[in-house]
Image (cartoon, rainbow, N blue to C red; front, side):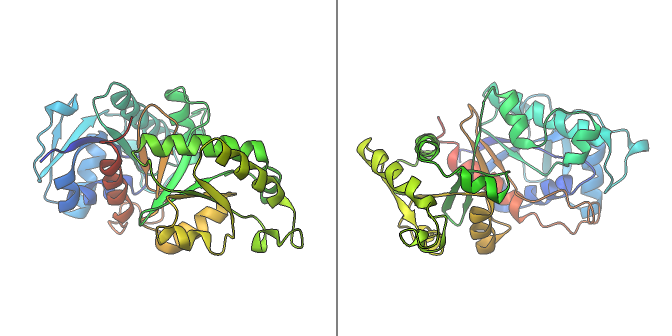
Length: 330
């Protein structure tokens, strides 16, 4: 059995990250598929094990190949960066913001040095990052900066359906203005390259429409007039694309296997489609980087942190998706 090393930073220590990491390690499928290297703080992980009454013992290591990958072992690279006397679950703090950043940074270093095959991230808190004066607002920005990637791509996958985003964290009004021929062509180029790096080389990419019924020839809007010439040019370049396809049907068709992926045109268009299908199993993959990163797509859940109530479904899925793609990742 060939198991890949997957680095898992525990996220904000005051959130649910440590608990969902412990729960994931207890899952037989995760154990059989991956050699999980946890990057965190020993005291915090001891707390999580105690809260969950988990049959795990911590084995502190400095390198992934020093691990004991048995079912009752949590292999930990201990950064020892949380002062227990100052720590409290569910609270924003500069200490935890800095700690979360340190765990991510170490994970990226391991991946860049090819000591792990991928990184699967847990939730961090933007306010805590700000309190620690970390100059990035989230995971994607941190990974982009520390891997020298100018504009990382985000792809969601759920039940085999893959969804890209032409725009993300902008207003809906701005997103409509960003539906332009040149941007669509650029994104199809980049998204196709990302799919190839993941080992996906066959199938058609669908481009979603923006307006009801793709505008119905101008009756309900004209933004699709930017999509048609983009698709025409892309086909001339040899890209297997289709569109615009009405947003009320394209995701269903992709789920049925008609398309290998969908380029959604704005944040909520793709998020609603994937998360309504299965919120917990919607996993984010960051592309365009020299390393592979998967992630849960939920927050730190400060309101239930330290209670043992958090579901680990997303964490397990993120690890398993990393395992799925890392053998082909180039």
